[in-house]
Length: 247
Image 1 (cartoon, helix red, strand yellow):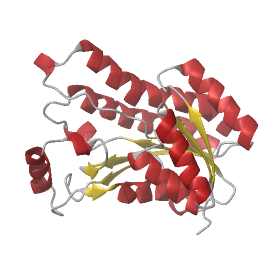
Image 2: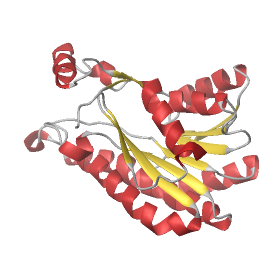
Image 3: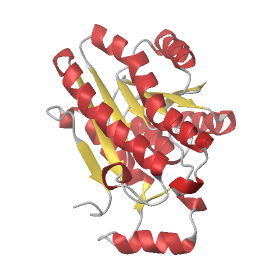
Image 4: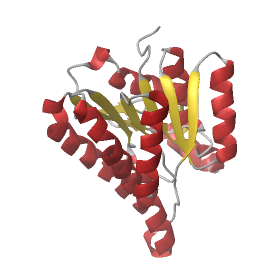
């Protein structure tokens, strides 16, 4: 306990799912949490839950696709909390369909949030990290960004792009004391997967050697490790959290 005492961590998409669980365990490790999310209701609820548990948490309504909005909210975090030590780029959506049926708007939305949103948040935050020659960025990608998936042209492309950003930024910022890594979750139980038909879930599980779906806490623990000093000589790494799906 206490691995992040006094450290400030921004977690995007932190009001639900993997992001919420990540915010909770970072808080338990002593971090001061800044949650970025577009869902004000869920944001307020998560902020309250973390505070009620004894943690320190500020929620910010942020549209990660809007660089000006992200920049202003990052400035607010600096003003409110003093610094930024960790950025977890978790915000993401799905809009699945076959290529021939996929609406252009669904392509644009997924790329805007999952990929451009990751770019926007890192660009807004990294300047502050460079000033003190220290920082940690963990991006949330996906196994489908590595091997693709039927019906997920937009999602797979966005998550493959996140891997490219991760490896590039790791090279760009290593000498500035900033590490950049990513997790690539497999099939994880989240509000996003709650909408998936049971038969599809059964197929997902059958393809996973461990024979089950993962839990949000298991991804959150991987993010925690990559952001901690326990991984101090790791950068540019894509950590699979997938029950053996990609071997």
